[in-house]
Length: 84
Image (cartoon, rainbow, N blue to C red; front, side):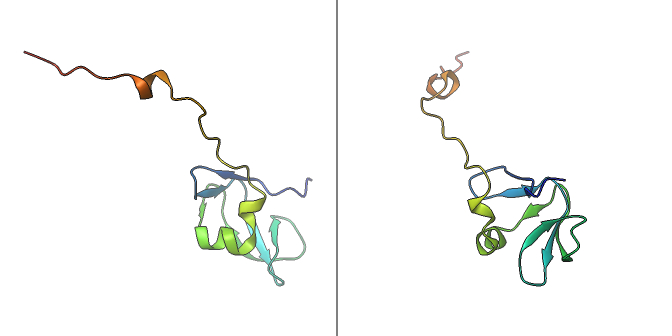
């Protein structure tokens, strides 16, 4: 079993747990099955509140959202008004 925590960023600030995550008594985040797990932090698919993400340092281990370098065709296209 890998020790890496499986979380995913779904927006600039929102992070979702991809597996059940637990807190230890000393404040570490561990996976389900860890012998030191003491309380459930997040169930699979559950949003982790931003304040907890920062407090627990999860924002440092999750990938940053990719910013588009160039606008897509949809973003640059100008819609013509419909005339009747």
